[in-house]
Every structure is written in C-alpha cells, then in structure tokens.
Image (cartoon, rainbow, N blue to C red; front, side, top):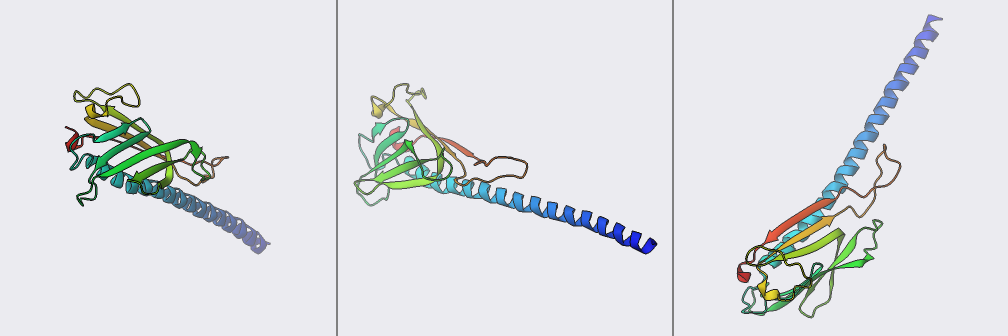
Length: 194
C-alpha cells in the first residue's frame, strides 16, 4: 500500500514540476517575442532617422538662396546637393495622415520621400507621428503653417513616433497590443540656414 501511495505522490509532485517548467518556458518565449518586436521597432526607427537626419543636416548645401521651398508641420520641401555631385536636388518629406499604412496596426501612417522628379518612396515602418516645427534666428517657433516666409527658418525640430506594425498578446492581457512605441525628437540647425 505504501508503494502505491509513494507512486501517486511522485506523479503529483512530478506533474507540478512539469507544469512549472511549461509555465517558465511560456514566459521565456513571450519575453523573447516581446523583445524581438521592440528590437524591430527600434531598428526601423534608427534606419530611417539616420537617412533623414543626414539629408536635413545637408539642407542648403551648395544652394545660394531659396533653400526651403515649402515648410508645413507634416510636409517639407527643400533644396540641397545631397549626393555631392554638383547638381542641386529637391527633396520632399510628407506624411499622409488620412490613409492607414495597410498594416494590422491602424494607427500607422505612410511617410513619403521624393527626390527631384523621381517616384515617391514609401517609408512604411510603423510611423504613427511625424511633425516638424520651425524656429527663427532667435529660436522662437513659427506659429503659422505653412510658414509664410521659409527663408527666415534657421532650425527645425522633427518629432517621430514608431510603433510595431504587428500585434502581440501577452499572457496577462486579454487584447492585442502594438506597443512598444519608440519616440524620437531632434532639433537640427543646418549650417547653410544660418
């Protein structure tokens, strides 16, 4: 009789340990998935901001006047010899805030980039916010958009938010979520605007 009792107790204790291992494995897998989503979101933001920041810092390079052609909170068009080939390029960035990006996350929008008369390049990386503010020589922000006199702009601040484009569900949550979001803000003072 004691042998049966020992076997039953061993099975119960072994089952409890096995359930704990399954729970631990599930938590590790969930944490790994969450970390992967965070890494992809951060990588998307870093890849895009490196290119955009490079172009914005070169704003007006080899251009005498009329550097910024159009300046709005969601749209900027400027001139620069961005590829250093002696030809002045026109670069435009603008956010389409009315149409979703097509990903499962309905908060994401498409940011467009256009170089000269080339095709529109879709930057579809989970952008949820893109906003530009402009400052004059005293550092005071312009309050009217589009900026009526773009030649008075001396610096600009770009705000960008990116969220995961694919949802994930944590075991403690009853709904899907798209976070983590990544926020990026940078004030740039291109040399050629001074």
